[in-house]
Length: 119
Image (cartoon, rainbow, N blue to C red):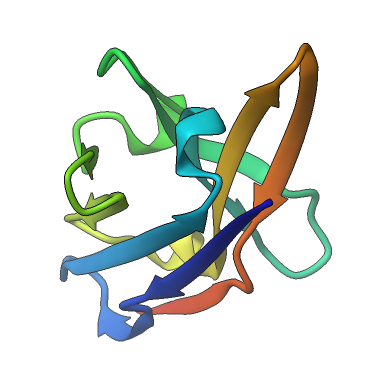
């Protein structure tokens, strides 16, 4: 089992910045990738950014150049630095971990943190 706890959401004006952080605990050794997803009202949950154990990253096209994902393996945390925020970035942001153990892959989710960008 992996537990994820997010922090750092809030209300910001367009053009501003926020930093989300997620702390992982439990079966840390089984994590193969971490990431951030978001879900806006009436829309499906979508991948924002992901980072592998090797440090490889991927981003949704809508956030490239504005968001940066990073991880601190010593602290078991993953962060999402969000700059130049737009109203369309408003959503609940979820921390995600993919864990693999004995050929069984599981996905874990944090409780979500609200990000609201005002125009």
